[in-house]
Image (cartoon, rainbow, N blue to C red; front, side, top):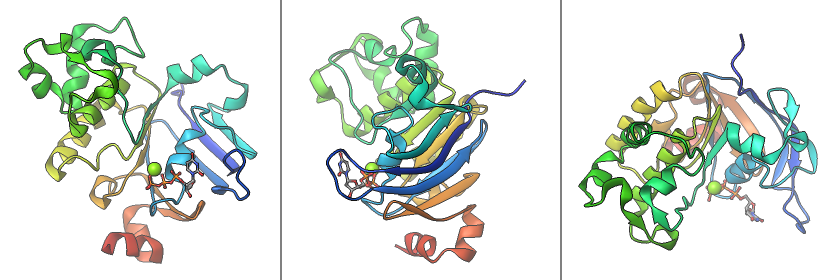
Length: 242
Ligand code: DUT
Ligand code: MG
């Protein structure tokens, strides 16, 4: 049968509450299970806003966001959360243990699943090095772990929840190039039949994406593979050269 996790944005226009002008205009794209879709664009171009509409942090003014053909506006929030994992640009940890943080979306995950997720997220070593391992305490907001460690724990948390759709908002740019490459290679296996949407800063993170959407001022100005965009998109060329 068909794998669940088809994401479709259909003519989506969105303005923040109280704002006069939209931050996203007429956004349309489809992401299929097994695919990686990358979103690139300058700061303020609307990448985070675009992702936020799928888990319904906000609802669009016009158009529709669909998950497996059903508008998310008609779905139960819990149902969306079960199927879509968002790793936010500013990853957040809860006060509690590392284990609590990892099990957040899936309380029945086994320890082995937690370690596997940590391994993929390149976070197993630092957790293993802690005296209490998975039982180590995270302070409120996760201030006792580094930014990179926090990011890896949040990636691991998303992996533990085994969603159909992964949204990574700039989740790899704080990692050094080698760790980024290792993480994405490991990620491929675990997300093979899921739908992956990645917001990225670094071109090397997204060269293998099935499709790259180039966002400029809330609009998709170009789309294609890395190679296609190199040949056709001045905006993409600018990003590559910057
Ligand atoms: N914006 C708001 N309210 C918010 C968040 C963002 O008005 O709560 C505005 C700021 C910006 C536009 O929306 O003009 C797009 O912001 P977004 O965060 O989506 O941009 P980005 O592409 O994710 O930028 P960055 O690369 O800095 O993360
Ligand atoms: Mg952003």
